[in-house]
View 1 (tube, rainbow, N blue to C red):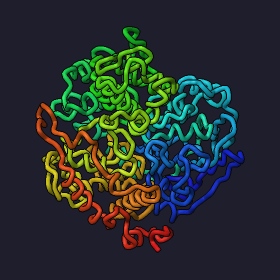
View 2: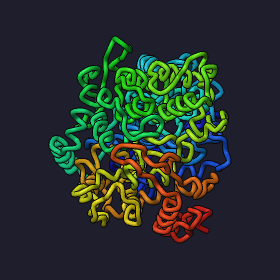
View 3: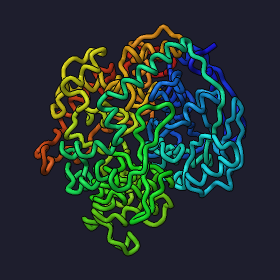
View 4: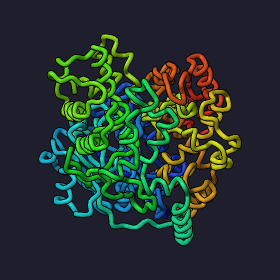
Length: 625
């Protein structure tokens, strides 16, 4: 019998209203393990690269890993993948919360969705059984209303992963929510789900996972809990959550401000953790079996109504709706964050789009006529909130902005492309690469477009911090502002370390490489859970296999080295602050990306070689023949 996983994958064809269970076998699980691996293998086998991401031919993969649901802090994430409507390439988006473990307890390791329903439906999974149900009454409801309705229709303890109106309206960066405060935000998976008329997947599981060495699992879990209590990064996250990053990022000069024009925001103090907690903070939230509890909850009556059940802003929300838009009101940022949660919008892309619109207005490309008589420039909190609702409904200018900055600029024209900051069509998360050159390379080379969950962040590996990467052979401390061959090596190795979290569904705030977990203990945990005589080498090889499959998928979709580039503004000198005068050189970045290709076993066009595919056991790919 399998340990740590169920050995069962649920296949749902919405066009034909059929449900099938497949059991791939231990070799398949050991080869692909979870997240990036299972998504990559499925998309390469199931999808023609020329399909419309919003057509019925697209396939959605909801997947846990072989260790999801083990009672260790952070072993609770799941991934969703498909062909992205935002980038036109490989999509993977991760979320924590309770949905992933619940799916495992219900008897399945993954759900693969094909086709499209002819009317709104939801999928009800309950202890090994699944059925497609009518969701006509749910269509048009926000995420909170949907959750309440499904609790009444199924089980009070149900876990729901679903879409809001933004997904129904096919906003290119619509996300998925579970329990209102956990999001698969990136790459537009909500739009794909909306195109399939799939409102939600509701799951209830009362089963238990069997582990190969349950006593060892308990021992590691206890050790990890004790480490979390005293490990400085985890202690900080428990106290302030990710908003605690705001002050340091601003002080370092890499807090994106006014659509990436600047690296410091004069209004940062009213967005930072101390003011946040003195004004709107209403308690902490957490994820399944997590000892960190980094989630924030907020409550207020004025000047904006905030409901503690609808989630509190994270650092990315503060960057997106605060500094990027030059909005210095934490209550307004929190309101925007809750609107995104309820309507089903990725807050990162939303902030990038709103800031783009504000800069277009300030440069006369968009006018008050485009905004129904409003003047929406930087600093306009109410204008920001108004645009969020317009985007989700695809009304007026919101219909254009729903395409993302790349698509919107193509439609608007008039030189607006100059202000559209993206990589591969995806708006970046809010860390200016001019202050983190390794992370910048990660943004350029991520298969999903600019994505902070796909890449290591330089500052975590300065000084003694690099010791976390010693087991992978990286021994020299990282210099965030240095951009050379050593930095490419840092990213090449660090990408594999970071990728373990996406492969195994581990929270970045509980696991390796910067928090309380260590590589040796992680390997012990995987072995104790699955019973496999495994190693760090096997796990890292599976990470690389996933990365390479994602690259092959993008190659098939027409991506070239021209798509491996930085945000345009990073080639401009930072105007002021600690990073004044810092900018990237285009030719140097192009050379370093070619160096990464060589390190990876890819050719000059960024295509994995036959030798690399053979090394990873990907013989079944036509590219390996």
